Length: 484
Ligand code: 5AD
Ligand code: SF4
Image 1 (cartoon, helix red, strand yellow):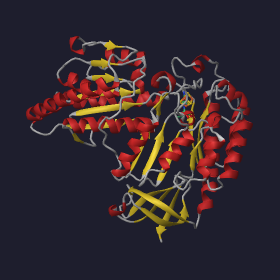
Image 2 (tube, helix red, strand yellow; image 1 turned 90 degrees about the vertical axis):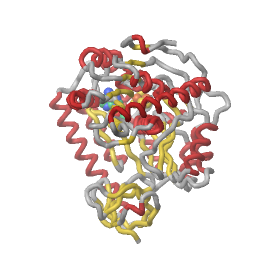
Image 3 (cartoon, protein in one colour; image 1 turned 180 degrees about the vertical axis):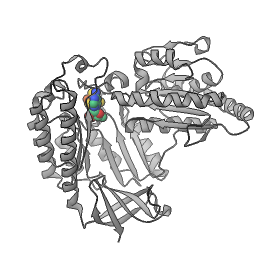
Image 4 (cartoon, protein in one colour; image 1 turned 120 degrees about the horizontal axis):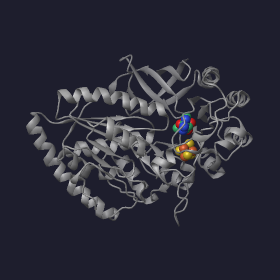
């Protein structure tokens, strides 16, 4: 076992020394120490130490942040929205370079706060920290950071927290990989009525542009028994909507002998009393089975929404991206989905400017967007990621061509989304109220089964409950409505 107390160093290991049960026990003991240390810190500060967890990136990170916050609250910290807090944790994303740049930009600001509050602690965790050159940069140029840890050892956070609180040097603990899935971490959910549930970690698809397989590791599925127990616990705790999370949920259970498939898992989750809505993310088009479509079609609880990233409308670009489907196969899949589940809302991700992409390829993406009629599409400019195959591919379009193409695509996406979402106009749909509208306190924001948001008159007492809402005004991606 490595001892971090000795020095500022990186433990870059690929195995877990203890069994999952032993680790759980070890972290429980660390939690007790953490509580004492946080109480002592509170005595020095003259107030309950505050913490602020800032999440960059995807739903997986959002769920990890809930675990981080759960541990911190358990240790005695008080949650704060402000980065003036005594302990600030950035849970980072590295899927595109602008996410990294945002972190570096904000770190400077944290440093000036730390100069005024020397007891302030700063931690960085998540995907960016899995990159060796990032660790090197933080070690050399951001020496005021107190703790760095990666995506594989989040469950050791109680222990890392103790080490940080007892130590003035930078603590770094980043693992290359892990097989371990440690259950039973305390969690503080952002919303009391809905929750993400990890069903698998990592990704084995190796799309040539994507850094996720390198920073999140090989695909590992949780046992269905653990997942169902978690969903049951959540339901007992008042959760009505769950989002099953994985980079590619359609390959759930692959490689685990005797484990059920993703459609079977959905059927099991559907049996859990109290759960009224089931969502999942993300589906890789190459693995979306007929069985899954049938389970969705026949389900009362599975939401009428599918996020189906296409990335490009050109078969040639898809080949270079290693997506393992063609434009035609994707369109056939969409046609099948529309036939079987006519009210399904489909959303997608698209990359513009992938090396090798030509203006003609981009044209094909635009025609595909028109043909599919997405309810929403997230469009990204390609960002080369160190260590991925595409980082060494030759660029084809100029920056100007890429940004012009991107703008054109965005206009088509927005026009088509408005047109597609207009099918809902005048309908009465059930909305789950999520929050009071941030711009207008007289309105609440509700989510429909198909993931479209609706703002309608209401108040905070409605949060977490379902209401029938008439959709009266189409604002593009969302609606204004009224309760009926
Ligand atoms: N550049 C731009 N976009 C990317 N994505 C993943 N990697 C990159 C990259 N290197 C996008 C994909 C993916 C989404 C989460 O982020 O569209 O579906
Ligand atoms: Fe990245 Fe492809 Fe895996 Fe999605 S499926 S996380 S894009 S490698």
